View (cartoon, chains in turn red, yellow):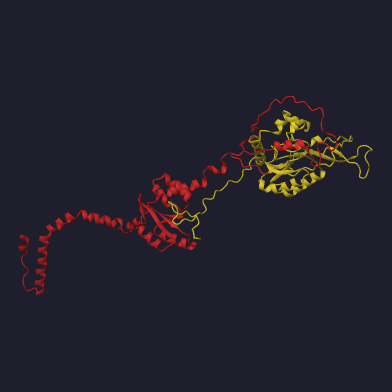
Length: 272
Length: 247
């Protein structure tokens, strides 16, 4: 008969002689008397090849002293099960976590996308197109990434890492090209992104993509700041500019009539 | 009225965290076992055991069946190997058994990475048998064969080397089945587990009446029906048999 499952495990001892030797309950057995008459009338010896028939009293004694297993009031299957603790962290998992940390540190744009099964050649094509814009595709396992994110500043991205997903990381922030490529791939859905330490949703990424580039916005800012001074300088130059234009028109008219008339004296223009 | 219901596991919309599609996680790569401290001896296979000892005993000796009875005091633990055959009953091993074991294990093991050693001595005890068809009387019969006595709890042989229990257990179990007493293939860990289980059973037995207690204090005059050896054997042994289910 099988033994009932036990709560613990055998003590992890290298030397078997360290097993606790139980102290018997009845240590000093009283000097028991031997019965005057032993029951051995005829029949077989003590050690036989066949199973020797036992005296009925002995059978009764064996039935009385059988093992009774413990039956607690609450069966162990109703109690909360202690899940086995993590024995030690897998070295491979540690390596992957270090890689993820480095990737997050080195990239300005991190986009989390849901990944559904794609044919391998489509995956390769997607990687190729994204690589052209210097965007790298990283497949990550949630059980590796979640501890890393929980301890870093990206812990608000944790709810995104539920299903199978990929990370699109890039040292530049080229969201427009990324969205254009992803639009053509229905199996990859953008969930959210973290661009320049700013967490953006899908809408936010689309708005960000519609923004003009940095150089254009810098030029716009400079123009806006220097608007007043440029207006002032154009105001000041309006009079002389008008005079110059009139004189040029006059010269053109004089040349047009054949050049018979003399050009006006140069002193008159110098007086003004 | 029967209504179509979604199975409980597939709830529409999922829980608060979203539906998690079950899929495989990171593969846990186990390190290969460390066999650094193991040396294979020069003769890895089992030694040949003689049928008759070098100096055979001429004087025929009494049967002395008590060398089968009870638990073994010798060779109960591993010395060199990691796996072995444990006897769970008493019996005699003769030359045929030795040859069977030697040849089966020699055939099944790889001498370059495994080794095997005997834990029982060569047959030394002479057994007599009277010739067939004669009446009682006429003295003791001549010596027919030599045997080794094995008690329960004794290791018969040990196997070790750069191998796992899974590789060794099939042929050890086959050999154990052919022995004249019940035997089982064990490893160091499984023997430790077995002993620990027995100890736990003894400790958490809910029965206040144990054989040992009844016999030691002779309750109800039980010792009239029991043997003086039962003080020592405590109801776990009956003749050459080992009662494993008894606590």
